[in-house]
Amino acid sequence: MNARDNEGYESETVYVAGPLFDEGERWWIEQIEQTITQIGFNTFLPHRDNPKRLRNCANNFENNREQSDIRSRRRKP
Image (cartoon, rainbow, N blue to C red; front, top):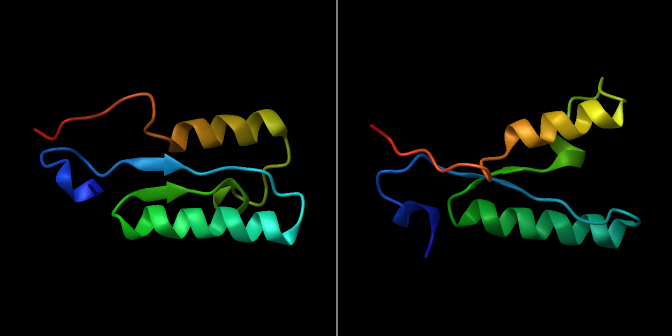
C-alpha cells in the first residue's frame, strides 16, 4: 500500500522524529524519512524543517504539531 491508494484524500504529512544523539541515529531517521517519501507521503523532519530562528522548545513543538496531519484526515471535495 502507498499514499496513492488513498484515492479521494489529500496527501498526508507524516511527522518523522527519533533520537539524534549521534550521526548514526541522524542517518537512520533520514533513511526512514526517505522511505516514507518514496511511497508517496509528504514528511516533516524536525531537525531539517524547523525554521532556524526558532530557539524556544514550546515554539518548535507548536510548529511541528501544526505540520502534522496525524490529528485528522481530510477528504477532498
